[in-house]
Structures are given as C-alpha cells and as structure tokens.
Image (tube, rainbow, N blue to C red):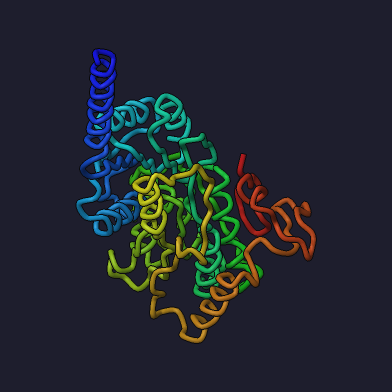
Length: 363
C-alpha cells in the first residue's frame, strides 16, 4: 500500500513538472512574433531604405497583430550594427533583417552567438544554419532602364553614379550599358564612384561631375534622389532607383526607375518563422517572383518604344532570354564570354569587370 502511494506521488510530481514546463513554453511563444529590422539610413531617404521600409510596412499590414516590428535606423556598417542586432535579440526578436551589404559579417557574428534566432541579410553572400542572404535580379531592370536611356539620349553619353565597386553595383552598371548599346551601339556609360551608399552631398557631386563631362542622362546606384535632382537642374534626363522618383519629384524628365518589392520576400520569410519551417537559403529572385519591376515609364518616351520594353520584359519573365546571354567583351576588348553561352549565377554574383562601352575602372 505504502509503495503504491509513493508511486502515485511520483507520478503526480512528474505530471505537475511537465505541466509547468508546457505552460512556460506556451508563454514564451505567446504574443506577436518580434521582428527586428536594421536600416542603413532613415526611411525618409526616399530611396533604398524607403523601399525596404515599404516592404516592412507590407509585412505589418499582412500579419497585423501577429507580429511586432522593431526598427533600428541609420546604423553604420561597423561594430555599431553588431550592437544593434544584439539589442534586437535582447528585446526578444526571433527574426532579424538587415538591409545593407557591409552588415553581413557583423550579422554572421551575431547569428553564430544566437542559434535560436533567424537572421536575414540583404545583398550579401555569407550564410549560416540560422542566417540567409537574399537579393533580386535587379540587373534585369537595369537593362531595361538602359534601353530607355539609350533611346532618349541625344549625345549617346550616359553617366552612372556608383556607390561601391561591389559585384552588385558592377553588374547593374554593365546591364545598364548593355541595354543602352542594344538601342544605340555607340552609347557609352561613364562611371564615377562615391564610395558610400548614403551621402546626399557626395551623390550630387558625382552627378555634377558626369554632367560636366557632357552626359545627358544620369543613372545611379545610390540611396537618395540627389543625382537625379542634379540632372534635372541642368535640364537633363535621369533614371531613378529603388523608388518611383518621377512620382516623388514630379518631373517627366525622370524617365523610369528600377524598383524593388521587398515585401514579397519578407512576408514568406516571416511566415516560415511563425510556422517553424524557416530554413537557411541564398535567394536571388527576379521577374518571375515579382521581386523587381519598373516604375511607370515617362510619357516623354515614345509609346511604340515602350512596347519594345514590354516585349523584352516578357522575354525575361518567361525565361526565353536574359541580360548576360551571348558574346561578352570587357571594356579593354578582352573576350569574357563566347556567342551562345549563358553566364552562370556564380559569374554574375562575382562580376568584377566592365563590359564594352563602360568608361571607368572597377579596381
């Protein structure tokens, strides 16, 4: 009898402990999923971070009270970003997004220290069991915008204000040049580097330097509208980036803007974190995933030419053609790819040379 009572007490104690543990786990996962976002600049830059924040807002609208977003803005690409991510972990974030290339090593450091948190890095290449990298095939939109710039330029001299000479930026410049030269084989693209993603003053200075060299269309891989504004002030054309510059500034001389749909990646990533199905990946989506698109084209661009842009867009969307297919020479005349060949993703993702027609140096 005594033995039975003792066994009963042990069972009750174990059951009580299990119930307490189950309650603790339920409490730890109850409430909204906390989502951290680390931004290089304020959303008010009206460019890169603005569009990222539009993706974040899309996620907030999609999930409602199922998530709570904590934003960290204007975080430098140094140890401060690591501290910002650690702070987000301390606040209970279970998935953290960081929107700039040079955050990646700092994010990897934090990811290795917190294996129970999911990390999402935009535009880099590093990964971990709990860290993904993601980006889109923006070079496709760069090509189309280059076609438009090549059509509208009267001098054939196009300018490009580049941030850093990373493969992402180099690839975009090359695609822009290939698009322009598909319309005007004599077109050139002159590049200036600012060595910053976000510096309105330096971005403007870069555009002015190109305008002084006779460029009549200014494109950019920068975070603000300053290069475009500098072009407009000289009575020239501009090609925006990230957001719809023509809509923002209200000037039809902004011919078009290659744009992002970051929410199309963030929403599924957050959903997988909620479901417990999140897996590390290296994602590079294009037209087929609606990660990228063009803004409405300026009415200054002839309507029949806009139909050519639509046709080329369809070709890429359907997988019948892509920008870096076929023969490719660099701007020193060296053959980089033979006719009939298709450049691999790895070669595009590590691109460190300029195509024929680009005036400038990657090194």
